Length: 183
Ligand code: ZN
Image (cartoon, rainbow, N blue to C red; front, side, top):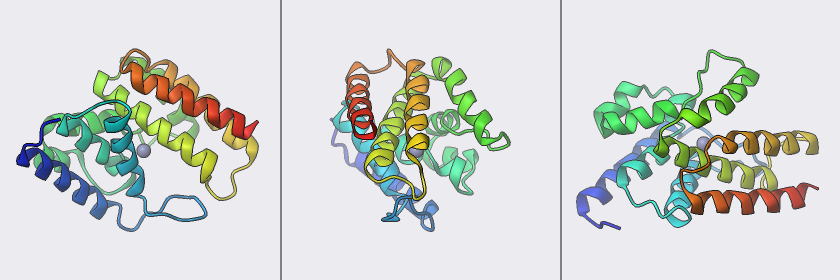
């Protein structure tokens, strides 16, 4: 991995930007941990399991939920972090005009045509969400709802395959553990 000071500074500024945007959000688990832990974990999985070291990709991972879940615009991301990062985040943002069910369907349909970078970030996102749903689930989720999430994530990931074999193997391992846990 390159340790160029500019790369580190770039990554840290993406982390700070994302932390500020997600300041008032919490994960839906009982522990109500700060939302920013989620994008940090996604970037960590990309780095540790997917061997990704490109600071632009890791920055896009840190920022992946800012447009969908906060007041951040794509223009703002482009200004701060460049067009490429903004483009990847756009690919990772659901169309919030659609219903929850339509958005879930769109993710399955759009997965195969996403860029290779967006595919890898999406895969890491699903890995982290499956872990959360299994070990720190959102308050009030029934077993059926958790199982339905695993099935849906499996269907999305079917369209992401071929982007990063290490990450795909890790997804399979995490899904397997989750399925055993949830029966
Ligand atoms: Zn996410």
